[in-house]
Length: 130
Image (cartoon, rainbow, N blue to C red; front, side):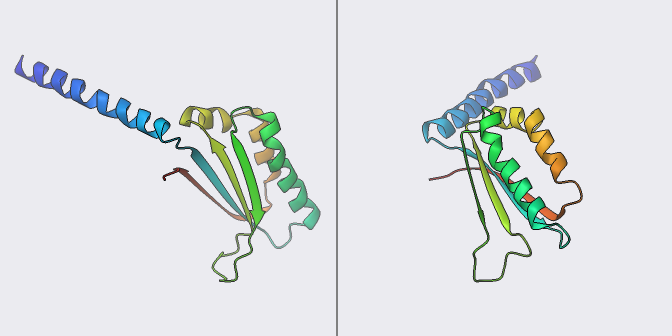
């Protein structure tokens, strides 16, 4: 009985903390960023790179949970890009939105375009902080 009371007390205290944390993210207008970096193989043609970039840029019109999107080419003079040339930022309002995006047929069709075209890919997701 004592263990049961301790478990209930823990759940009573722990659940509001998680709920409060979630509310905190929303109240601070945090956004979930999905950053994708591509390093293309040397043999990938410029036309194929354009096709892939254009397909990625078209996703916001096809997937309603994408809140914002931007992309660009590496322009750093530091030489620390390790071969990554293309950077894409996909913004979501929630992890649930990202869960809709990842298996979405339009995203999966895009992923198929990448087959055998990339030397490397790096993906980092994070909640924005002020």
